Image (tube, rainbow, N blue to C red; front, side):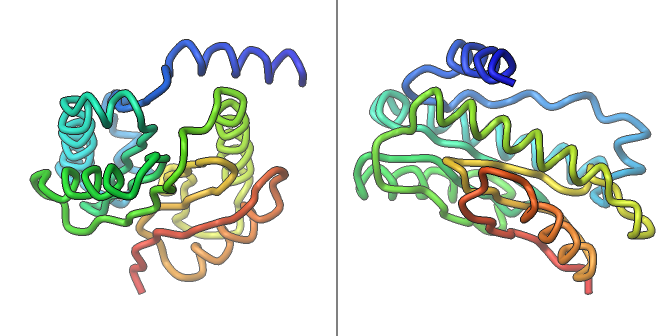
Length: 194
């Protein structure tokens, strides 16, 4: 476990500098992915474009790029903004920039005003996210449910759950997530079908 944690810490610190505003490139959209996700191919592509455009916008501001740690996740046009900004003014600039991105329907502002978390905390977040995703893969009691329907984002021990789910699915996902170690808080950003 210690070797795994150190590896994650090193890998994550190489990818992330003092500030993270680099857009992740998602995997190719496959037929299997479309079977496991309730969003259409077009919506998935739009969500990826929202994320890329937001990261591009934020990276173009040197102050944000150098002083903040920002993570952008889009699901069905709703954008979750997490991370840290050292001042309220920078936090407001980040949210204002994200709100101007095309196709954004709603912005969930979960930025924390404070200095960016360190590499060890980020590595712990990766481990928590992996743990939650593995636990979601064990859900077998829900018909038509796939763990691929849920985006799991962890920021400083807080787990954010995004997805387009039925209320019973959301409840099971929350309960399964709650059982994972190291989680400080769970925040749902679900869009409910029913």
